[in-house]
Structures are given as C-alpha cells and as structure tokens.
Amino acid sequence: MRPQAYIVQPSKFPRLQPESQPSMSESPPPSPAGPTTPARFTSRIAAVVTAVAAIVFAAELNDKPFVDEYAYITQSYQPDLLLDGKRDDPHWLEFLSFDLVPVPKYMINAAFRATGTPRPTARDALGWYQNTESRWKSRRELIIARLPFVCSAAAGCAAMYLLASLAIDPTIALLAAGMLAINPLYRLHAHRAMSESPCETFLMLALLIGLTAWTRWWSARGRATTAWILWILTGVAAGLSVLAKFNGLLALFTLASWGGLGLLAPHGASPVRRAGLIAGIGLAVAVAAATFLALNPFMTARPGGPLPPAIRSLAEQGPWSRFRFLIDQRRSSSSSQQTMFPHNALVDPIERVKVVVVQGFGRFGLFGAPKSDSTIRYDVQDLGALLWLPLVLAGVIRAIRLGMAQLAANEPPTALALVLWAAVTLAVVTVYIPMAWDRYLLPIQAPLTLLAAIPVREALARVKP
Image (cartoon, rainbow, N blue to C red; front, side, top):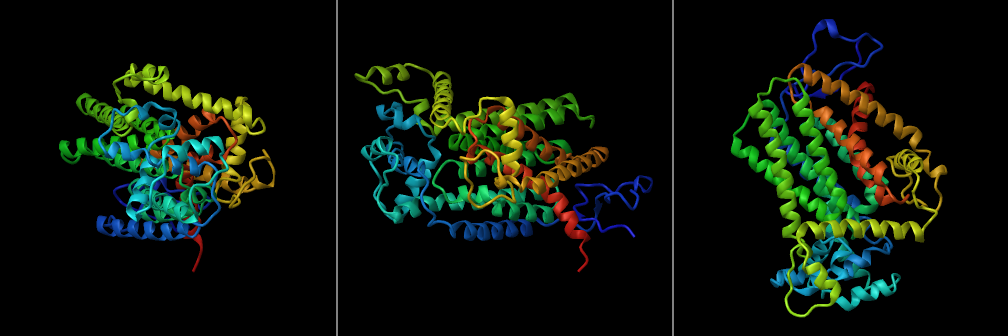
C-alpha cells in the first residue's frame, strides 16, 4: 500500500502518468485532492496566523534591551522633519541621518505619535553615540517602540503563509509560517526595535506579490493592467525592504533569478511575452528605486545657504553618488566592526562558508537555542544543524522534483522559484557576511524554513492517527 501523499492543489501539480508511479520505497508524487482553497478562506487563515504570531512575539516585549535599539529609538525624531515638509533641511545630510536606515525610525516615530509619547531629540541621538550604554527614558518607551516591530514580524509570518500557499500547498504553508514563528533567531528579532524585522517582512511581501505576477505571466492569464499593478506593488515592497536594510536587495536579486527561469524554460512563450516579463521585472526595480528615493530624504535633500564642508560636498552630489556613498559607509562600518571585534570577524571565504553552514543551520536554525553566545565560533550551540541541515536538503530535493513536475505539465514552476530564492539568499549571504553575528544570518532562515516544511508535511502525513 502506497504511503499517503500530502494534499496539494490540482492547479499546481499535475497527476503523473501510471508508468511514472514510484515503487514502494520511493516518496509518492504529488496528486490532486480536491478543489483549490478559496481565496477568502486563505485570507482568514492568514489573519489568524498574524494574530497568533503577534501573541507569541509580544510575550517577549519586556526582554532586556539590545544596545543598538536605542540608536534607532533616539533617532526617531527625524521623521518629524519629513512630516513638516522639510525635505531639504541640512540635517538630512548629517551623520545621524545616513548612519542608520530610515524605516525603523519611521515605525518608532509612528508608535510614539500614536501613544502621545514625546519624541527624542538630536541631542539624545548624539548622546547614544557618546555612550552606547545610555538608555532613553523608561522601559515603557522601549516597549512602545517595539510594538510596531512585533506587528511587522507577525505580518511576515502571514506573508510566508500566503507565499507558500501560492507556490506549493496551504497545509505546507501553515507549517512554514508556524516554523518561522518559533525559529529562535526570527523570534529574537521580532521584538527588537531594529531594522531586521521590517526588512524581512517587506522582502517576503515583495516576493509574494512578485510571484503572483510571475505565475500570471507564465499562465498567460489576467489583464495586462493587473499585471502592471502587481509589478508596481512588488517594487514598492522591495523598496521598503531596502529602506529597512540593504538586505532587501535580495528581493530584487530573487526576482531577477525568476525572470531568468521564465526566459530559459521551454514553455513556448512568444518573444512578446518574454519581453513583457523583462519589462515587468524592470518596472519593479524602477519602482523600488523610486520608493527608496521618495522616502529617504538623504538621497535628494538640496539645502541652501552656507553649509559645513562635509554637508556641502554631499549636497552637490546626485542620487547615484549618494547611494554609492551609503554603500561605502556600510563597508566602512563592517571594517570597523571587524577591527573592534576580531573574534567575530570573517575575512576568509572558507570561514564564511563554515559560519553559514554551521551557525546558520545550527544555533540559528529551527533547533537552535533561544539565546546564543557569539563569542564562541563553533560549539554545542550548533548541534541542531545535524537535524536541520538534512531536513532542508530533503526539502530542496523534494521542491526540485515538484518543480520539474510542474514544468512537465507546463504549469508555473513555483517550487523551483522557491529553490532559487533560497539559493540566491545563501549565495549572497555567504559571499558578503562580514561578521559571525546573528543578524547577518537572519535572511536565510525564511527560505530554508519554507523548504524544510515540505518533508515535515510528508512525514506528518505518514503518521497514522
């Protein structure tokens, strides 16, 4: 008797022909079992996922503060200038405006405004740089500042659920969202008032909308107007992710890989349709850039009057030069970190690979400890990799098999798109990771969790009640 196969949507995975049926020792192929899940039901489940995840993350709101949180909190006065229409104020070109990304500051500012909490001042922000151990106000202000990040992380779990529902199966999607919510690293950053939570959420939202547009293009269905709207929304979400942290560029890299898959796959698309895919992804990239410019006044501020030399030099530069300045600033910051914390510095490519494999799948994977010690490079904290790594590899193999079945049926190979997301993220993180710190390994957790949910669902399906 064949092992029970997990339930999938018929529009995603075609029934294989009898001669391709596996033997008793092989994993069963996906087979249709019932109608596609209604969109209304899926949206309701997504709302439940958001609520449950928010409760899980809110339980740790009173956790002790992390040092960098107060850098963002004390700089949350800056959005007041934007709201007052002062886009060309000289303060936008000062160190306090470009050292940290703007989205977390906007979120904290909104939380303070909503609760009637007085915002900090530039003096408070400078005070943190003079003494990073300083604390602004009381624990109440810290919790208020953290609230939007809890909501953001919960929305990220919902985006994971919707993305996996679109790409594979609602049951696997629910597992993936739950596994992401209990991932120790994701859960840790879910309540911190920093850039990681919004970056991951907007990144997954961009991929969700982008995959929707991509599948519609592949299937040649829907109105062209709707497709353009989807690509525009993809760009907005990607731009917000980059504004939260430069890791958001992974969304654009992943979209480019999906474009390559669409162009290379032999599914009979006409040159006009292929050009439409290129144009759609190009539009998303352009909108992401426009979003980045519109919501980051540092990129466009043109203050007048007498200015200090450093500010005048920036004021004379265009957006592209300022973007390169930001990149150089991040590189300089990474170099400073490597000098200040040599025990965490990663200057050897081999060490980067080892950290991503051992720590990324170990202490920061699903089976990692709730809190880790970054002063120790490799130890018992990473034993969880012995379980998590094989599980992820099984998910990769299974996703590739599902994707090939989709290709054979001329269906959108959404499972292969997920594999590309994981591959692009792993490659970029491995090449550029500067320090063996948890936040640098957060981007790989979501795609790996989604892939690992596939064999977990299959294992649960074989368990007899």
